[in-house]
Length: 80
Image (cartoon, rainbow, N blue to C red):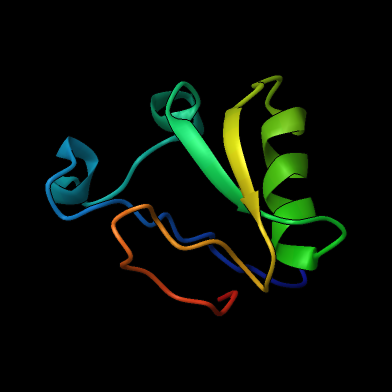
């Protein structure tokens, strides 16, 4: 392995997943997703990870910028 770069998941504070220390793709695969517009490395990598796991996330919105903020207005505009 050359590099390990974990993905971050942003959810509203009241969401049940917010209390979990970690989640798997299968656990979040059926959630509704807001992603950044394509092409963008963060969006492309996120969608590629799902595709590799044969999971089709439900994308409800694409937002312009480095990454998308959660509907709650919380989150980061930076891909980490």
